[in-house]
Amino acid sequence: MKISKRLENVATLIDNDSSIIDVGCDHALLDIYLALNKNIKKIIASDNKKGPLLKAKENISFYNLENVIKTKLGDGLDTIEYDIDTIVITGMGGNNIINILEKGNLSNINSLILSPQSEIPEVRKYLMNKNYIIEKELIVKDKKKYYFIIKFIKGNISYNEKELLFGPYLLKNRNDIFYEYLNEEIVKMNSVLRKVPDNKDIIKYIEMIDEIKKY
Ligand SMILES: C[S@@+](CC[C@H](N)C(=O)[O-])C[C@H]1O[C@@H](n2cnc3c(N)ncnc32)[C@H](O)[C@@H]1O
Image 1 (cartoon, rainbow, N blue to C red):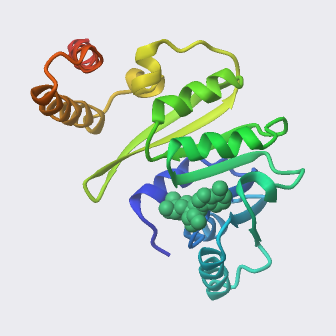
Image 2 (cartoon, rainbow, N blue to C red):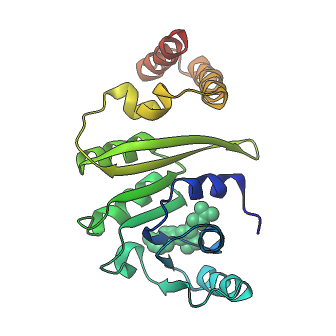
């Protein structure tokens, strides 16, 4: 089966042998792809809305995977089971992701694969304060949009402001897409600056990007 480049990249960060809950599974295409292509011990596809979950069930049954993927209706991590060690949440705003994690219990969770569509630095900071570190992060361009896909594992670290803003892993492992993203951020921020010329936060942000591009 074919899934989007974004979801294919999410799948690369999920370890074989893990037991996952995909919160906000919608169509469950990621879960079906994982069931067909990786050795995942257990998969829960969960959503808080009936419509998406119905679509998920139809897709799962199309691939005859009803015995492999368990579907559950419920808010956030309410649907988690005791043996789940990996949380996957993609395609949601960062604040929504933080709210979901804040209401749940992370004590059995070894890794989280998150792809927030907004408030990305806030998500990095939230999990740093919950004793997780970023093991790997991907920046993917799919249909002209940039996506950040972050794998957190247990650990203690203190990231600085620049690392929280741009991702410590991405800063150390730069690729062309990362530089392309930085250039687009500069263009975007310069157009904001033309409207509010003395916005100190934006000036500082642009200076940081210029600095990153130099070294
Ligand atoms: C834009 S879709 C993303 C689907 C898929 N994860 C992806 O990346 O393609 C977001 C999904 O999250 C679900 N959702 C939003 N808030 C949720 C919550 N608090 N608990 C469970 N599901 C939620 C929505 O119903 C929707 O199906």
